[in-house]
Length: 228
Ligand code: B12
Image (cartoon, rainbow, N blue to C red; front, side, top):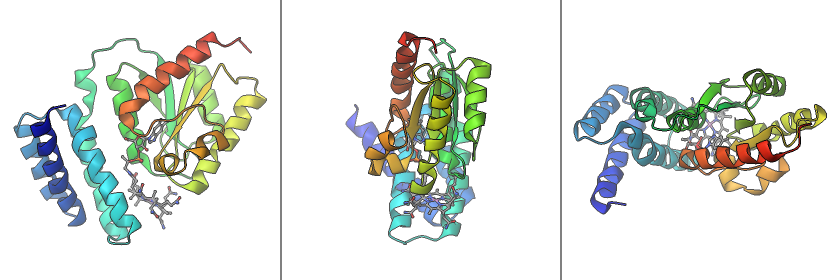
């Protein structure tokens, strides 16, 4: 940890957040130009600047201090940052194990999932991202097709998190429990950790930085499980 660098990151977070609150996408692009011009590593921008800005934005939304329109433009700004800072170029690992991710049925909060996918790719996973509003059958069929043993499901709302139970039931009904491991994540699991077990998840991570370690743990568990 480098205190001056962290201080700089916190200041950039505030500048980026200001453009989100102002719903000013061109200004956000300029802020990102400035950040990258300082030599800040693109991969670190996501975890050190974008992620905290979105968490603060979430608090403003919760306190009803910003509108849906502002949030929508903020989401577009976050996508712009992601596109420019996806850490693929920094990939060092090369294990290329397949993994499947997606947002559960009825959930359209794509940002967190996309950040998770970027971090997994950077860590060397061969990520199959099924997108938003994914049905249980689609998760299981894709995992079997590509030989993935870890499925990572994102859900941001309490209502949509409960849809993960259908995926749990399907995995169990097909006798794939143990062999296919289920990671769950999204803001709602950070507020209510008990929900992980309630929906049948086998692990979570509070943010994208913890997802590689979680997927490795679940992969090791699956590879040690008896074939069903
Ligand atoms: C941005 C946002 C939106 C955007 C989404 C844009 C997009 N393309 O993603 C828009 C405007 C579209 C939207 C719509 C809605 N939203 Co909204 N939204 C948010 C907001 C402000 C931020 C979410 C976000 O992007 N966070 C930033 C990312 C980086 O964080 P994250 O998603 O948590 O992801 C990180 C971790 O959780 C983890 N992670 C994520 N996925 C996974 C998966 C795995 C396997 C693992 C291990 C880890 C992991 O890693 C990620 C990266 O570090 C939240 C507020 C909040 N506090 O979360 C509300 C919020 C989630 N929304 C909410 C609601 C109600 C809605 C709407 C119903 C609003 C409406 N009336 O239309 C709709 C529903 C849409 C739907 N059906 O999905 C509520 C949910 C309430 C609840 N208790 O369930 C919240 C909490 C706001 C609130 N306080 O009321 N929303």
